[in-house]
Amino acid sequence: MWTRKQIVNPWTELGIVEPSDSMERGERLRVLDVLANYINTCTKCYLGTIRDPEKILPLYMGNPEAKIMLVGKAPAYHELRTGKLFAGKSGDELAWFLNMAGLAEYGIYICNACCCRAINDGQLKTKQIKSCRAHLLMQIDVVQPDFIVAMGDAAAHALLGKKMRVGEERGKVFEKYGAKLIVTYHPALYTRSTVEVEERNKEEGLKDWVFLKELIDGKDNSDAEPAGTAD
Ligand code: SF4
Image (cartoon, rainbow, N blue to C red; front, side):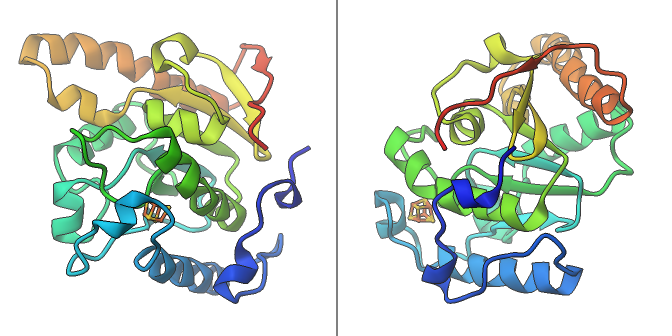
């Protein structure tokens, strides 16, 4: 069984007490606030050294007591402009999937694999994903979700500790971080296609969100996969 002791423990670096299993909402918000401030000064990887200091990096959005955690890639132009994650078209796509799968009413916490904006056409390097992984795992520490969705290759890499292709891992359930973890495509994928292709792709992508709903409802018939080995 996973416990936070198994991961790198950077809490002392932030000067705050490690989260307990029974954190009240206010305490969760306070700890996330400390982490949000921290990532805005972080220079652990190259992305932090080229960041625009005028722009606030949003760490997360949603409910810190949520049982569902969604993990995307990294903030993009609209996220930095508004200070909110999934502020652009990909947010519209994500909302569509959540609505269509009957998940819109659930408490959800959303964050990213990488806290700084990616360069090079949005591609993240392994080093950047590894550098920021501690921040992602700290959020899992605080939120303690029952279900985690890795949206896209970068999130799957960060959460499962190895490079993988989402198309080959969809439909599997990984037992990880005390949660059931599944992978799906990043919602931004659906903003880049023609209308016809987008509709076909979205029908396919929707299956992953319906699968999540079935897992939550206890209707999963799939075999659990062994977890990644990064810890
Ligand atoms: S991407 Fe993450 S690890 Fe790299 S500088 Fe930004 S906050 Fe720090």
